[in-house]
Image 1 (tube, one colour):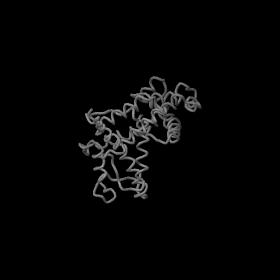
Image 2 (cartoon, rainbow, N blue to C red; image 1 turned 180 degrees about the horizontal axis):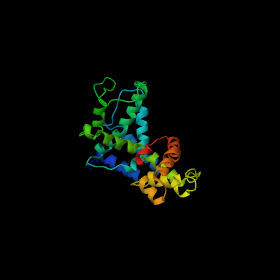
Image 3 (cartoon, one colour; image 1 turned 180 degrees about the vertical axis):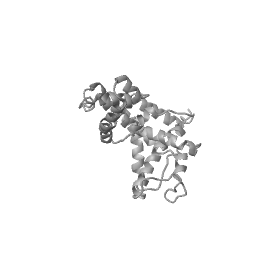
Image 4 (cartoon, rainbow, N blue to C red; image 1 turned 90 degrees about the vertical axis):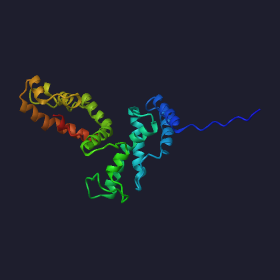
Length: 247
């Protein structure tokens, strides 16, 4: 009787697909998902493509990235035949910003902004190089802002959703009770819902006509009374969107 052959170890792609499938199959916020996510992260930590920098707070940036990935794993979409490549690209896209944060707060405490063509840690690599390695190999100066905006949108999607939910719920009736004298139909909750939550948003011109209120009165009410309430709540949630852009 011949001896049994030892089974070949699973290749990395198979491991990743199985562990990712286990995460997605488990209920959100369940113990099963937490366990499956832990196993997936253990494998991801070993991938050579995950960006590493020589910084004392790098592990903090990496842990923040794993936490973000755990919250947003259902949003991940593979785009090539290599799951390893797609996961590394997706993870590095967020890790870039966390590395940027630790570099800003510790290495450059007196500066508010970084230049993308500035060298990182005297290693001969720039932030533009890092961004390219994170999956934007065809990056050009013309579309750089679009890529950055996309990453920032992903990062703040969860907080933005909380702000929109708060507008719709208005739990303390702060928005509903704020309106021009005698014009309760122009309260801040209605305006917030139509200008912030609705996609695409309504313009103040269209709203003024629909609500039969002078345009300047509506603009003054929105900017002087509604926006401060919304901006205060946004800060409580840890994010201050530029609400004026939706006008």
